[in-house]
Each structure stands twice: as C-alpha cells, then as structure tokens.
Amino acid sequence: MMYYREFPIAMGTASGTFLSTFAALEVQDIFISALLAIVGAIISFLMSCLLNLVIKPKFTKHRKKRKK
View 1 (cartoon, rainbow, N blue to C red):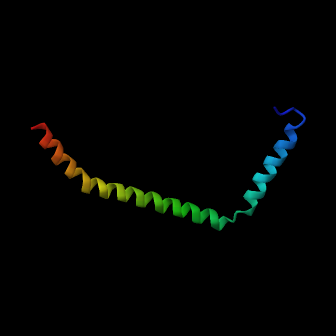
View 2 (view 1 turned 45 degrees about the horizontal axis):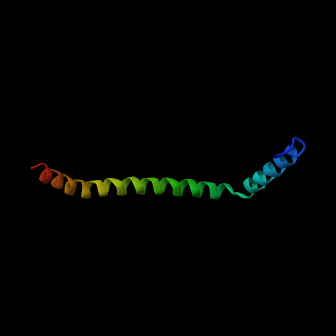
C-alpha cells in the first residue's frame, strides 16, 4: 500500500523516467517507426488479399462437394 506521503516521490520518479526516455528519442527514429508501421500494414493487407484469392476458390469447391 502506498501512503499519501510516498505518492509525490513515485510520481516524480515515473515522470522523470518517462521524460528522459522521451528526450532520448530522435524525431528521425519516430518517423522511421511510423513509416515501417505503414509499410507493414500495407504488406499485411496485400498478403491477406492475395491469400484470399488463392485459398477461397479451394474452399468453395469443397463446400459444393459437401452439399451434394
């Protein structure tokens, strides 16, 4: 249990850790991370569309056979 006297110390430690980590990041690193996230999302979407085109016809053939 944290007492009310310890709360400012804990908040100061947490905010200092956060701000020192945030200050260590460069703007270029943030842009590179955002660019890689966009590229990853586009590749994931394209691969799911490609797999849907390849796999979906195979499953529709099996579904038609099962209904007969």
